[in-house]
Every structure is written in structure tokens, then in C-alpha cells.
Length: 450
Image: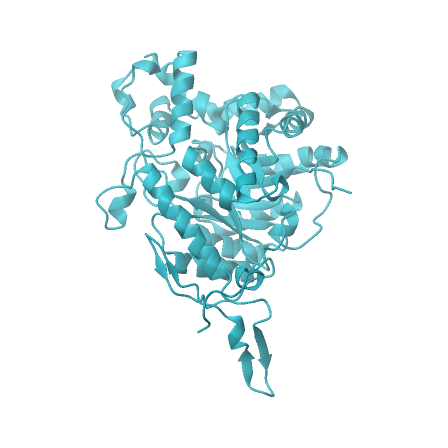
């Protein structure tokens, strides 16, 4: 009998919270982004709430428009290694770029964390969104590659990484002290990858983990991003403006799985939300307003600028119709920019409306309210098949995470929508994903051993 569909939950951990001004709140720890004990505590709270995973984002360049917690923070792979030491069950996902990394190094790093955590690692694959083009200058390049070019490289990059993760068969290492045989030579395989972007011999110098391979996570919604996700991803992070748009995207993306011989239950779509919970709706709104009152309008617009082509909003008054702003060509998150432009035109937004309208941690929506109201909204999106779960970007940490775990999770559990406890130890087990077969075992061996 098929198992009942259940909500998947990911906690987006970023310093003192996703809201641009969270660091200024009286309850916040403004140095949380480089306070490892504070970040470990957040992961422990999420684990108490039986979350599937804790998620760490990244960027490889900063400027004066950056979110405060992007300006000063840990490398994500290093951080999830520290989080692994402070937790036992929760999955741990880190962001790493296919545009500014090398496959062998990245494969080794994530395989290492997967072993250290006991099979709880996930890799959030990004091609690096960069509206300003400044990232390239940190990597000895003159300019940031074009969108489709980045995805072409990403296609090869993932293939190389996953091939390297299969270098060793699961029973390759025997550690036979009597015979002096450390491993079976015939059970280790060279990848010998030859592509347009990469030529990688292998093998990787670390075995497969308990879950076989780290879980692949992505967030691309463009046409190349959807194709890459349908072919390779196991979790996709999305953020749509309303339920109907989310449903359409859900159906469109899931329908693409068949061409890659994949099933829908191998692929989870998580919608980004920013809940604030209060005993009453009025209290939740008050908590929201406390954060909004800390926002300097032009400071928040510098943050918006990073998503819309590095626009100088200081040239415009706050009541200027946003459709009059001169937006340059964006070589960043294409789908997000297109969605924002469409809403600007449809709703005739003013410049001063942009931050609050577009960014989840600053939006008044159905996810701000009492525990029951927030649970109802989550259930509505889930049962409508607009999402398989939620990437939760808490506006103020640890307050909003703690409130969600204490008050909303029990309601979802009572309704049978969310697990009462972990039923396994690995991230794949939490997500209901199979351990992937080793490609060198599942087919005739096509590559020589070393």
C-alpha cells in the first residue's frame, strides 16, 4: 500500500533571520552569522521539530546592496560540518556553485561531510546568480558567464560529481589484516570523463556514504533550470507569488520527469515561506510590524537592486511608479526578475513598495497569523499540490523558528500531515528517497580500474 503523502520541511538558516533588518531587532544576535554555537542551536531547534533538513545558502561576492548576513558569514560546507557535530538526525544542505568550483574538489568535500554526518548531506546546486557581475572578478575572470552558458557547464558538472561519488563500490574496502588486502582493486573505478568543460580521470579518494550519494537540491525555474532539475535534482526550492502560479509550476516541472525515466515521488518541490506566529492574529501582525518599522526605505531598495540588475533606486522618489525605472538586462535569476517585472506592470507598484511586495520575509500573507491559521495555509498549499513541502525562511531567528516548532508543527502532526518522529537516520530516508545504485555496478563495467 502506498504511503500517505507527508509534508517536507527545510529550515533556511541565515544569521538572525531572513528579514533585511532582523539584526537590528531587540531580540536578535547581530553576529549570529559567525556565531557557530548560535547556528548549531538553530539546527538543534529544527531537529527538535523533526525538520527534514537545515539549509545554508551562499554567495561568492558582496557589495553595499548585500543582505547584512551575507556580508559576514561562514563557508556553507564548513558550516554544515560543524552543524553535523551538534545534531544527530536532521539533514544538512549547503550551497556550492558549478560556475566557480571544480568538480573533483566539490565531490570530495560533500562526500566527506556525508560521511562525517552519517549520510545527512545535501548539495544545493547553483550556477551563481549575480546581477552585478562582480563574482567573476573574484575568480580571475573578466565577466560573469551568460545564463544559458552557466547551465551548460552545470549539466556536465553534476555528471562528473555524481560519477566520482560512485568511484568505489559499497563493498570495495575489506580491511583484511591477515591477508594484508585493504580493498578489492576490481571494485574501484576511474570515471575518465571527457566533455566540453571538464576532463576528469578519477577515482575519488573517498568511499560512498551510508546514503550512497548526497541529495541534490536546486532552485532554477528558467527553461534550462527546469531541465537540469528534472534530470538531476531530488529537491527543488521555488517561490511563487500565489497558489495558482505555484500549482502550474508544480505540474509543469513534475511532468518533465518522465523523459528522464523518473517518478514523481523521487522529486520534492518546496515552496519558500516566511511565517510569523502569534497567539492571536493581532500579535503576529505586531511582530511583523516590529521588523517593518526598522526598515530604512532606501536601504531596503539597495537589497532589491541586487535582484533587478543593480539599479540605482536613489535616483527615484519612493512614490515613483516602478514601471518608470530603467532596468538593465539581468544576467542573474532570470525567472525571478521576469516575475517581478510582470507584477510591477500588473499592479502599478511604486518604488517604495518593492521590498515589501517581493521579499517573503517582508510580506504580509497567509503565513502570518495564529498557529492554526499558519497550519491551515500550509495544508492548503500542500493538498492543492502547489508544493510537496516548504523551505522556511524565518524572518527573525531563533524566535520564529522556535515558535513554529512549538506551536505549528504539533498541529501538522495531529492532522497526519507531518511525521511524529524520524523513521531513519539519513537525509534520503527522511525524504523517502532510495539509495542510488552505483553506476559501475548497475551496468556492464565500461571503464578500466586503476
